[in-house]
Image 1 (tube, rainbow, N blue to C red):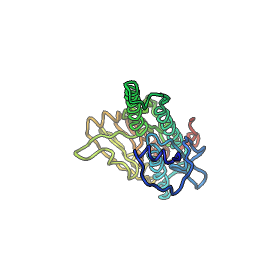
Image 2: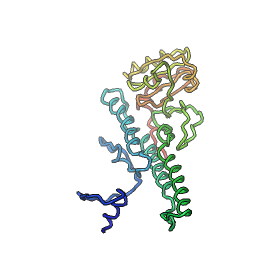
Image 3: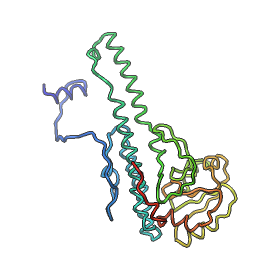
Length: 290
C-alpha cells in the first residue's frame, strides 16, 4: 500500500476506488504586498494578501478591498473624486489586510496542538481520556478561529487622509469582540430604524449625512453640491441609534465607514468635503505604520 493509498483509506474509512488526476504543491503562507497600487494598477484579494485558510478570512478581506476601491474608482470616474483619493486605497487597506492575515496565522497556530501522544489511538482508558481532551481543545480553538467578529467588523481606517479625526478614544482592537462605534474611520454601527430597515440601508449611494438632532447642515449640503459630491441627508429620531452614534452629526462614506462626526457643522464645510473626497492637504496623505 502506498502512502497515498493509506491516506485515502484513512480519510474514507475503507478501500474505495480513486484516480489521481493531478497534483500541485500547496504552501501555507501569510504574505502582504508591499504596496496595493502602482499608477493605474491596483491589487485586491489574493493578489494583495495571502492567508492561512484558518478562519476563512481571505475572501472576506478581499471583499473589503473591493468595497474600499470600488467607491473611490467610481468617484474619480464620475469627476468628484480628488487627486489623492485613489492613493488612499493603499493607506487604508494595506494595514487592515495585514491585521487580517495576522489573525489567520494566529488561528492556525491555535490548532497546532501537540499530537505526539503514543497512546492517542489506543482503545484504552488512557487513550479515551487523551482523545476527549484533544477534542475539547480543538473545539475551543476552532470556535475562536471561525468567529473572529472583531476582525470582520472592528477594523478602523485610522490614520487616513480622507478621515477627519476628532480626538475621541479609538475603539479597543479586539480580534473576537466587537463594540460598535462612530469613531472616525470605523464602520458605522447598525441600528434598526423600523421593521426590516437598518440604518445601514441608508449607505452606498454617495455620502450619507446622519442628523440625530435638529442642526443646521445647509453649509455642508452646499459644499457637497459645489463639489458635485453625492450626499443624502437623513434626519433620524431613534434613541438607540443616537446613543450608538454619539454625536448629533455623522458623515458616512459610500463604503459605510465614518468620515467625520461633530456637534455642529464645521466652520469650513468646504474643507470638510474636500478632505473626505480626497482633495485635502497632501500632508495628511502619509502611510500609517504597520
